[in-house]
Length: 291
Image (tube, rainbow, N blue to C red):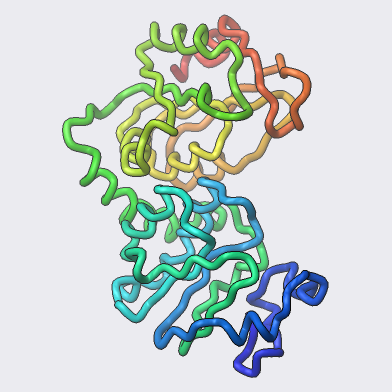
């Protein structure tokens, strides 16, 4: 972020990499000189997490709009973010009050100038997940994206459904015996879903109406922010990797959360992206009371 003089950097609200800007292959005066002027209020929501990731977009970036309140609907208020390349970006911004006419999607080495700039103070720090599950962020997401999703996709949906979120459509972190695992869960009343087949509203509604959720770790579990108190969720990790991210979300949302560690990790991939083979009998025995 640069002050009006075009040369002074405001470090406490800039990227951690901002002091290194002179080492990047671009001409700063030209970029700033070509920056369009917005006669209104601009709010940047992006941080240093790249490339686009569903979880960080939903739980970190979009949550930063919560402080705006009704101001989000003013025609003079704009959001600055990365290029809109996914439907969930457009849908979530729309549900939060921003149509595309008030979204400024900047490519690398582009800039924008504004009459007023409101900058979240946490941009230099990645607060994932959702500011440590702060109640105001959960309330904001549930009252905007959550309610909008249920209005759009909740009609006729059955509450109390058990769902297994399959990653068979993913490029990594798959369950290699997914068919066997899904069949075993189906005998316990679970319906298998793949999130790439669903719109944002359909994803949110599926999680909001579910009573039980089983899934391999993945960005789609950001939808757990919309789970209702009492929901039981089991997150599966490869033995080689783990994160407390969704346990933190569970603490704020008051659903019952547990993890299962798959010890049969397939060789070849980096630890966070490893595929696994699940010992189905062991899983059912270990997690039986939660299923």
